[in-house]
Image (cartoon, rainbow, N blue to C red; front, top):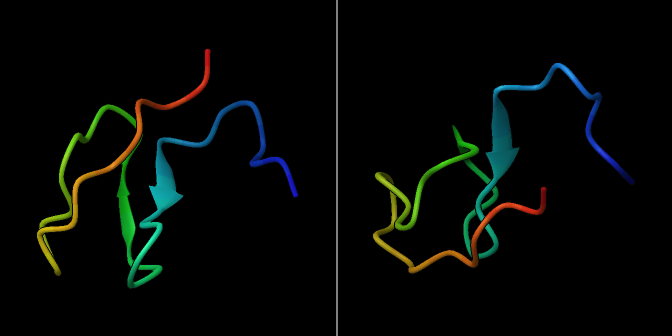
Length: 38
């Protein structure tokens, strides 16, 4: 499912914690993240 257009966070791909859209690494589990679409 697509996040709402005004969302400021997205789920981490590993631990599913909410992380900022611009994050390149999760602050909770330190997994590297793909760049946010858009």
